Image (cartoon, rainbow, N blue to C red; front, side, top):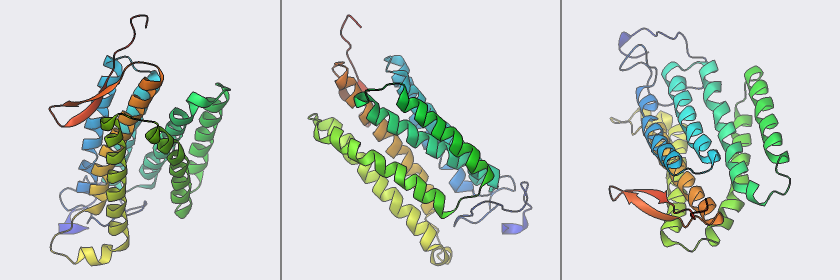
Length: 254
């Protein structure tokens, strides 16, 4: 505990990270790991407003809201370093991946009710089990498997996309997840060395920021692909010349 500050939340019961605890406040265990979730919330709100304003399918509104819930769960976890809050961060991570799987694979799924039913039950059972059992490596392996299940479909969408700007969204998605993974691994594997540096680069905080952009790019790319499937004439435009989003033009009959 840094600077003699007492902890409001009590002893650490969750996985701890490389950032020193309670440096800036006795109410926030990991300050930078907490506030670094804010960009994810802001980007998800932008995506949600765009999805609602242009009346995209509800699945995308739910997807953006799941990003917000995940970021809030992460903030609670890193600010308290308690086991319950860690589970409140990890369970939405799995739910979000199940939602991605649904969005990616449902267009070609012939039995429409079976996939959402199975994914809902899977998510509910996982939440119960995760509340009772404390996973370590098992959770990471499980989450990685869910991520890997998305890759073939994302690649299929990429190779069938001819729009240059949309392809750039996919490339930005890959670049941010690669850089974020490097930050996460560096923070986890070389914490002892990093802690001796004069300046801690806060690799886990950078992971949060980069994954916020990663989720936004992924969501935007999927919105473009789905709009193209539905014949909504999508195009990628940029807000303030920087942030990409999808603009659609639905047929008048819709």
